[in-house]
Length: 229
Image 1 (cartoon, rainbow, N blue to C red):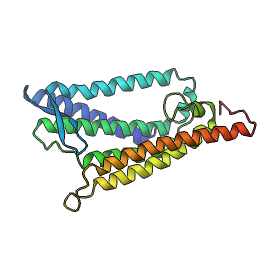
Image 2 (image 1 turned 45 degrees about the horizontal axis):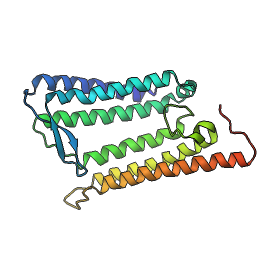
Image 3 (image 1 turned 180 degrees about the vertical axis):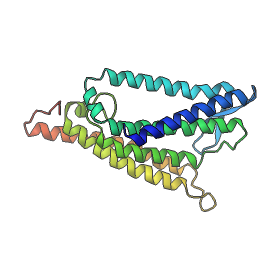
Image 4 (image 1 turned 45 degrees about the vertical axis):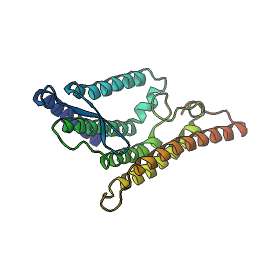
């Protein structure tokens, strides 16, 4: 893993753990914490103090299952070769977890539980980072665009990840920029998230098309798709 990604991830996890434990000890037993936000970034779901442990439990279980999947991945060597890119993906997800957990903690102390600007900015920044990392991830069965054609052909895998990487960078950048526009200038409402989801769905459809056409082109040339690098 890239040293920067390792340090950022470690600090984010340590800080989140510290503030979570502190909040659990200091918040009153009847505290109400925001655990869900609608498309306008307004909290519309609440739970008691035990909600502080919900997201860490989900994140921890997901991380454990992912680690096990990588451990038994037939192409584990390719994941090791993609360690820097995978590290950036992990860092992005850890930062998303840290920001979300911070919002939950702050809501327990009476902080405004509105994320109408924070959600698009955080999601946008995350997808710019993921878009940068995706083309660098080598063929495997755990992380990436796993389709029949990408798992069968290295060329299809590479083409699909270049396509989705570029699309995610553009989608993320536009979403984040829309998120920082002050409401006093123009109230965009749910527009940033709508742009994000349209970009996300379009990128997946495009990557699927690119993977299929690349695989088919190789088959038409009479070349058996390579399974290994």
